[in-house]
Amino acid sequence: DAGITQSPRYKITETGRQVTLMCHQTWSHSYMFWYRQDLGHGLRLIYYSAAADITDKGEVPDGYVVSRSKTENFPLTLESATRSQTSVYFCASRQGRAGGRVKDTQYFGPGTRLTVL
Amino acid sequence: AQRVTQPEKLLSVFKGAPVELKCNYSYSGSPELFWYVQYSRQRLQLLLRHISRESIKGFTADLNKGETSFHLKKPFAQEEDSAMYYCALNHGNKLVFGAGTILRVKS
Image (cartoon, rainbow over all chains, first blue to last red; front, side, top):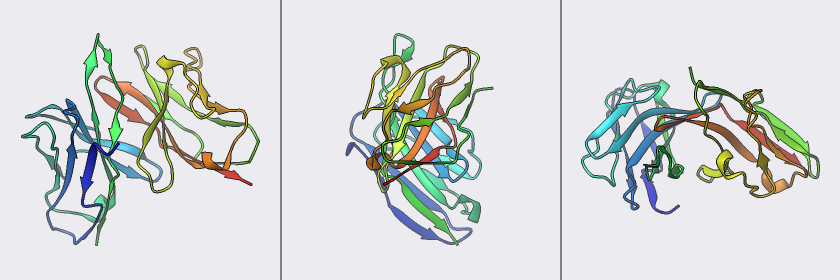
C-alpha cells in the first residue's frame, strides 16, 4: 500500500485559485485514476489514464485537468477552485489487463482532503 | 447503463449479530464485482472480489445474476468490522462504485 502516495494530505484554498493534487506510484502500474468521495455519492471517477500521455474523462471531469507525462505520476489540477469541489480526493492505480479480464484490482492512495473557502 | 446501488446509507448491528450489506447492479455484460472497505482514517482497500469466491475476515459475497445482486454477508459481526463498505462494478477499464454503506457494530 505504501507504493501509492498523495500530496498534500490536507489543503485549504480559496475560490478561484488553482490547486494541484499530486499522486505518485512506485509499481509502474499502467492505469491510474482520480476519484472524489462525497457523502451520498460514494466515489465518482474524475479522470483516468491507461498509460503515460493517455488520459480520459470519467463521470465528473468538469473543472479538473490531468496530465501524465511519466508512468508514476498523475497530478490533478483544479484550474479555478469552487466550493463544490470541496471533497476528499483519492488516487488509485491498477496493473492492467490480461486475457481480456481485469488482471488486478485498484490500489488506493491515502486521500487528500481539500477545502475550498 | 451501468450502475451500482447500495440502498442502505447506514447499517447498525450488535456484536455477534449477522450482517448483510446489500448491493444491486445494472450491467448488460458479464459483471465483475468487488467489495471495498474503508476503515476509519485508512485508505480504501479491496475486501473481496466475486471471481475469487473467497472469504475474507469472515465476509462472503455471492453473485446472483438472476437478482443482479452481490450482497456482502458475515454471520457474526465484530466491532472491528465497523467501517464504510463500497460495492463496485468493473466497467471497461474503470470501476463504478455504489454510494457506500456505513456499518456500525455496537457492543
